[in-house]
Image 1: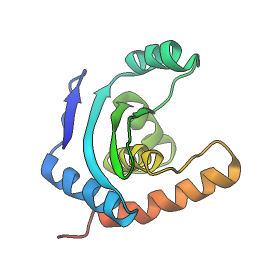
Image 2 (image 1 turned 180 degrees about the vertical axis):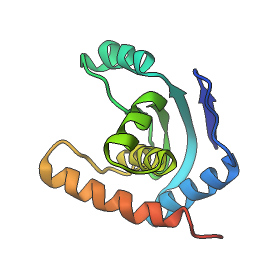
Image 3 (image 1 turned 45 degrees about the horizontal axis):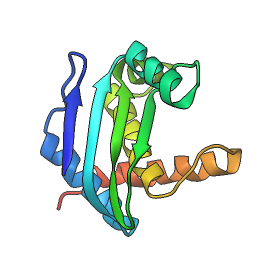
Image 4 (image 1 turned 90 degrees about the horizontal axis):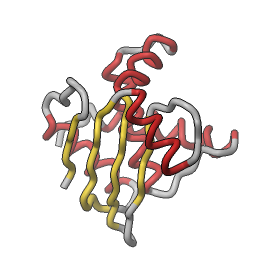
Length: 139
């Protein structure tokens, strides 16, 4: 079950559509969705998590805690709405598109994709593009 939570004044519209999309994403990678929590927050909230759990003193758009077991994707995905909004402006894309990219990025990490090296980041970006197209597919 995918749940959406917010530490800021932000809510996902049409939550069921996002749930269906994530289930399709997982399925195309050979996984099932278990318990996944999306927690929307601000930069400061995510910065504190970054410091506390990862010892990184930087702002980021997403931190995912992976509790996947076998082929059952599970975890907590924290997303800074502020950072997503800033990145959307920087990359000249709509906020909703950047939000979807970040949301699917967390799921792809759970599927085993990394983004530490340039090569891994390129593969991750291609997977994000591929999975973004699934959002518009009706089931």
